[in-house]
Length: 217
Image 1 (tube, rainbow, N blue to C red):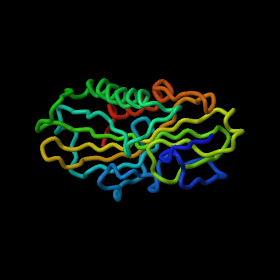
Image 2 (cartoon, rainbow, N blue to C red):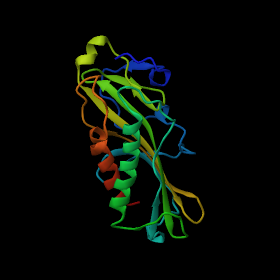
Image 3 (spheres, rainbow, N blue to C red):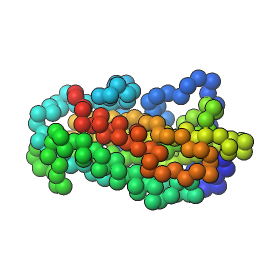
Image 4 (cartoon, rainbow, N blue to C red):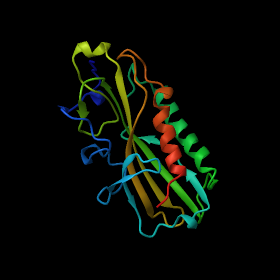
């Protein structure tokens, strides 16, 4: 797959003999979170591998409401013929709505933080499209990336991956109480001419929202 837009080009590509890691590595952290040093391997409520930190002072019972900020893309992506701005907007809006819907069963959804509010900030930090059957792994943080491959790979299915970084802060003190970095897998695209759409990443977005609802320290 050939891309000419610099933001989509890979600075470094490794061909791995084994399977790609199920959790983002430090080289893939975007800089959206203010601190990554305390992240440790953990499992989400559904058992998915994540990198996570929870403040020792965090007490879920202190919060009766939640403000779910609209996820942003970090760093800002440059859309192309395969990933449109409309698709990006749909993905961010859907993730916000899905988290609100799931969390509404536990907490009151608010538009402005109060003393008992948990504020959820999140960023989608990468969307990775890689040819099926190739062990292609991106090792630099990028907003959107399609793995460089031979022209023959244009006829192969493309695996889709999406990365997210999330921080929950106390609405009264603005102190972080938890940070999470994780990635998810979407549906396969038929080839490098197939446009990425919201439906292709819904499985990952829905899983993240459900894990937010079922989160326990």
